[in-house]
Length: 172
Image 1 (cartoon, helix red, strand yellow):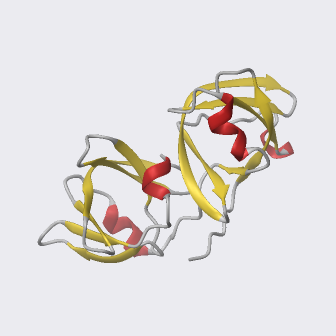
Image 2: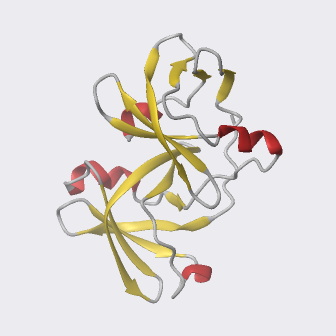
């Protein structure tokens, strides 16, 4: 699977403080024009990994400070220094993408035939839709709704079979 991100927000340049916040040098296009964000993608080992934002502080110029859910120490987040940060992944704009408008209640089945959880909502970002999935362990995770990840959709049984990148479900 290849990830071809269209909207580069910036790059993590350093840690900020000791509570897991990072400083992002944002691209010129976003200076004074930063969109409201609930999540971003970090490129980790060439793959997009969604992260929920718990705190955001725009410092002006080209500096943005972000803190991610469940990353509350500098040790946990330090491995992501230098990672590129994307607003969204490219969304397939063909008509079939519109068929995914209401997937609440669908079960997510992984390629190894294990049930990950159920879709509890869809987040419609401008460039990428995200499935909000509640796992069997009552944890919420975001999964990019991208044709490369979908193996099949069974509307009768309300099951989406997906082949997800390694580590995606553990990281967010």
